[in-house]
Amino acid sequence: MRHSICILLACGLIMAVMLHLSVKETPLDIPVIYVITPTHTRPTQKADLTQLGNTLRQVPNLHWIVVEDADFKSPLVAKFLLNLRISYTHLNVPKPDYCKSGCVARGSEQRNLGLDWLRRNRGPLDSGVVYFGDDDNTYDLEVFEEMRYTKHVSVWPVGLIGSRRYERPLVRDGRVVSWYTRYPGRRFCTDMAGFAVNLNLILANPEARFNLKGAKAGMQESDFLSKITKLEYLEPRANNCTKVLVWHTRTEKASLHEHVTENVDIEV
Image (cartoon, rainbow, N blue to C red; front, side, top):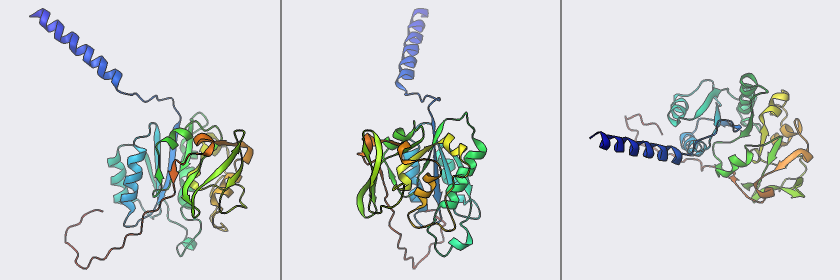
């Protein structure tokens, strides 16, 4: 009897060790990816956040900073984030009054609040990278590992943008020298989804913010990057900027025609 119990215990120990080895552990010392996402109330908001959230929850050591364009945090977004079970921060700030009738700086106030949170809650000893991920784009998981070890500012192509199949940095001898873009004339011809910044570079440059008043269409990214870097310091990723790992997709605006309204309150 005792011999049988010993055999069972030994078998159980072996199975436990095998199970432990089969589970891929996440190293805690890898840099944290901080994704700042502006979001606003609309019929497709939860659908867009769900798609993005299901992507981000697969990325190890990631902290999602979701900033609502609102006077208060909505129960919908608060409950969604709680149920997602990832590391997150939920913030809110309304767009300025002068932007409520239309503004080229859409999302800038929210991105700036995300940057403010990082500057208040992180320090020089924290390692990480900051990425501005809109809630209606499409992301390959590989793009997050490409950006994770950014030393300064990393860049890569973005698909389905500027009425083109893609736009990208042009690389020669491992360095960015120019841009393939429909709209040249900017110092940094990249989309918000096409770059990431080392956390310490953000912390060391408190003046690095997105412009609100006086902002010109298509210049938000270039103006921001001009405050913290130069072309020669850019780090090309995604196989020397020849692979598209993020797409500037947009969810079609929902056309809702409900003539009969149910008495059941269903969250959509």
